Image (cartoon, rainbow, N blue to C red):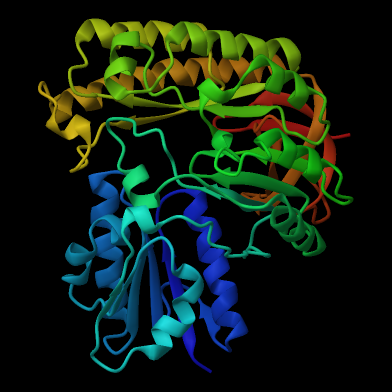
Amino acid sequence: MKKVAFLTLGCKVNTYETEGMKRLFEKSGYLVVEPEACADVYVINTCTVTHLSDRKSRQMIRRARRLNPDAVIAAVGCYAQVAPEEVSKIEGVNLVIGNNRKSEIVDLVEELSRDEQRIEVSLRKELKNYEELWAEAYTGQTRAFLKIQDGCDQFCSYCIIPFARGRIRSRSIESITREAGKLINNGFKEIVLTGIHLTSYGKDIGMSTLIDVIKELDKINGLVRIRLGSLEPLYMTEKMIKEMSTIEKLCPHFHLSLQSGCDETLSRMNRKYTTAEFREIVENIRQYIDDVAITTDIMTGFPGETEEEFRKTCSFVESIGFSQAHIFQYSVRKGTKAAEMKNQIPHHVKEERSKILMEICERSMLKFRENQIGKTTDVLFEEKIEGYYTGHTGNYIPVRVLSNKDISGELLNVRLVKNGTDFVIGQIV
């Protein structure tokens, strides 16, 4: 039996697509093995969101070649899409696949003759149709990602992803609910809806919206939780928020990508909303949904970010009080408008600003968790770590409890007792 191994970088969409490709290989008689094993085929699902992502992708390719010099190496995904020639020059790469032929990967691998190299990358304008790539199951996880959309039309000035993923393409609700049913039959209680630009779902087909998808999933027996991936703030209208508040299975957790808390910086980023609009969206969510977690992404060191602009961001972030934040540094992406902007920020300044924001967000995270102490809520347990079973609440607080029996995969009522370092200690009720 031939063996195939996968190495995945980047976002939840990549995780989903890797699982889909695993299923295709399994159905063709391959055995999926661990990434460090000796395999006949290695699939590296690449990322290009930052220059570090590019570098890690190259490292993974070289690592696979060292594991088995005779293996077929397939580099797929975003880095392969935007820089196919560059990727093809990495020693050992046999096959380069962009973002619209992953569903054909088994055939493409098996069509290769020994020592042949092929590039199967379409132009961005040719990325027109949603590519079906069902995951159906996930290895060693209790929550399942379910991709409902691909592509982005926003063109933020710093972002390479619209070039890597193409225009918005939405998946049919019928296809979404069918795969959701399979995931539930395979034992998953929580589904995380994911996509490149989730809130724009349906914009291209003009018949359905994200809320329609959620309502259809809410009807499925056996599904306990629906969690949303990253959301663009501008699309979160009060009407949508009110509708979401009536859906019991929807987790009270909204990841709203802020990027900057300064209007001048947001304008240069081409983010299309102001801090006042962002604040109003957060206030609406908190008005309609109890105990809701608001998480976010914030970028430091965007070109031209002055000390005053950064100070405004810090002040705004502190005033919002995010329950969790991903802080990252601006990375030059060739081909984007921001790459050509003047006043690029030195690396040490980006690092210092990141540390400051991390400290602010750490305080707000602890405050949010402290406000939840004493409450009883449901926790979906995932695994056992250091003698404790660990899981997450609906509002994405990591919880640890003691239990004499194996509760992995179970959804249980837990009273939140006290804050730990990176988690909350709970007690099963």
